[in-house]
Length: 436
Ligand SMILES: *[C@@H]1O[C@H](CO)[C@@H](O)[C@H](O)[C@H]1NC(C)=O
Ligand SMILES: *[C@@H]1O[C@H](CO)[C@@H](O)[C@H](O)[C@H]1NC(C)=O
Ligand SMILES: *[C@@H]1O[C@H](CO)[C@@H](O)[C@H](O)[C@H]1NC(C)=O
Ligand SMILES: *[C@@H]1O[C@H](CO)[C@@H](O)[C@H](O)[C@H]1NC(C)=O
Ligand SMILES: *[C@@H]1O[C@H](CO)[C@@H](O)[C@H](O)[C@H]1NC(C)=O
Ligand SMILES: *[C@@H]1O[C@H](CO)[C@@H](O)[C@H](O)[C@H]1NC(C)=O
Ligand SMILES: *[C@@H]1O[C@H](CO)[C@@H](O)[C@H](O)[C@H]1NC(C)=O
Image (cartoon, rainbow, N blue to C red; front, top):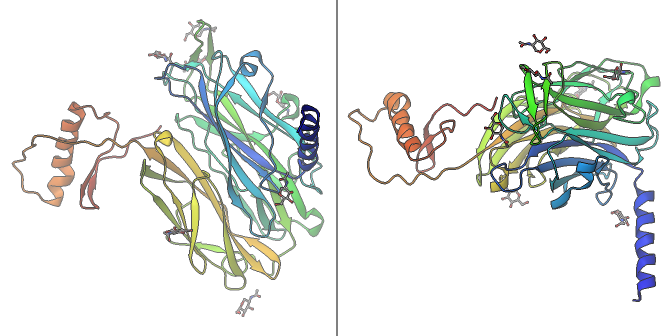
């Protein structure tokens, strides 16, 4: 192949790429500051979800400020999280680690083609913005982490049923997380028209009230999630400049965009008939789960629907998650966090989908937040002696504390939790570390 034909085929690929980019189902962007103990101070770990009709469609986050344009990739991977089985949508997760020339705040922007056709609230093209704050916070002594959340690309509700979508709004720094609709004057979306059929509270609950058939169809939901400090704080840049923030000033912000489908009425809004109803042991919405690096976390999800057929579990989370169907309406989501995920918290959200002919019905949306614990292998040499009988009471109250003190002397961080294990049976656990 000569040079001329090669550049021609590259051009054709680019054209194909841009004409495909018209089936957008929203996005979510989150970030953690990179490891400040390394010799690269301004490293950011971005994880974003990108939702399209096809798994091979994607877009690239751009930037406008000097600092951001100077950035270099350390890692850039995109993998499929979940493809809806009828081919409605595909969610991919991107993990990019980038290095920046300074810790000045900057925005990253996703600005490409069009949402899916027929959006009822008049949205055509997509635009999503995240504000990244890397300056040192006076309250935590480190850079900000964004709120952590996710969502599936399309959630459904029949037009005659009320439903609350309680979005996950977890903040690793313990900040107050608030939601608002994207704002035109801040160019967070284009246009920003919120769905008329939804009302949003600052605590991130989207409420749908029953409406008539004229309001059916797909809506583009374009939210912004922001973290606010719990007290006045000062942000200090490495060049020495300082900025004071009050509890009314957002530190960072992330976009949360997805499609809400308002479907034709269902014969009954009672959950468990046509609309799937979650049953135990499905974790409660907002549950906080902990798992050590390298250990597989299994989340059991169970639902029933007597007048429709539960067909699949729709979920959003780290792309390394996988699912098993273990029975009718029974699923297990499994995730084994890796070393690079230690100390961070990851959102997982899910909805059970049922079919009645070709009509799809969704359960409520539920989310959990999974905190990945560091594992310290304490090879305790020597002995710790106890002049106490080895009873459950003593183990819980005295013995584990004494072991913890001993292990701390040998370098265990004081905020770690400790499990006493015999075989693979957990005997007791000290208080879990508090992440804010
Ligand atoms: C993307 O995937 C679709 C369906 O799987 C396929 O028809 C299309 O050719 C693919 N496009 C590219 C550029 O690979
Ligand atoms: C942030 O500030 C604290 C003191 O307020 C300091 O101990 C810490 O080293 C600073 N962190 C960085 C990354 O500069
Ligand atoms: C958008 O945000 C700006 C700045 O926060 C505010 O002044 C304006 O009222 C907002 N507009 C709407 C429509 O909410
Ligand atoms: C926070 O800062 C604001 C503005 O500087 C000030 O009015 C307020 O008193 C401060 N609050 C506290 C608790 O220090
Ligand atoms: C920030 O607040 C501190 C007091 O907490 C004050 O001394 C300083 O002048 C303030 N800086 C700015 C830029 O307002
Ligand atoms: C649901 O199914 C039951 C049993 O098959 C049936 O008796 C009932 O009428 C159905 N309910 C509706 C609202 O169709
Ligand atoms: C889930 O399915 C995978 C193959 O898809 C299998 O390797 C794994 O053992 C299954 N896990 C459970 C808990 O059934």
